[in-house]
Image (cartoon, rainbow, N blue to C red; front, side, top):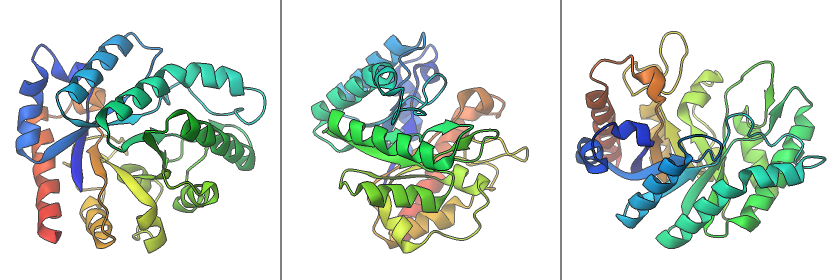
Length: 275
């Protein structure tokens, strides 16, 4: 297992990349992930930072855009060309940096969402993943498990659906991104089946507060991540476990940077203990 952090230019503030990453690396972090949203004012800075990190020798993973207007709904029918055009810059960057790394970089994907029939959204999601597999031969797409967000139906709102899609597409580069916080919000209290665990190739980890807000450091002990990591070790999982933090929410946490380092130290202890 490699421990990673979802990096964004805003995390650096007025400091340098290495000043920010040093305490995380000392606590066990070794890989990074970048969420790619070409329609934001931060796109140029994100491209530059991701490129610099690859050049510096970090193993870097990527997350395809998912915030509005990025949505796969309609890909299998009327919106294929429009969606392809919208996603192309992000996929091109992920493919270029994945090839440069000579490393099987993950590319995390959110399934389609809409107030629509689940079957239609699944078709959109599967068609999009097939296109991504063709467009990014040096990356490894990962379909993420997602929590409910009414009124929308979201592809991937259960372990069974995510696993079924990955098995149906049957491509060795495609895997499951198991988001442990989303899994908790979906109400799962038992560990996944061995079949699900063996399909997991990438993991997002974060904690949930009492108000059920997600993407915090591991400070509330609500998400049963310790048991989840032990289960992954039991099936010889060798992918990345990425601490995915919402910087705006986490800004309310006292001594935030220390808590981030503490989160990596906690994860490292579990990984080492069960190795």
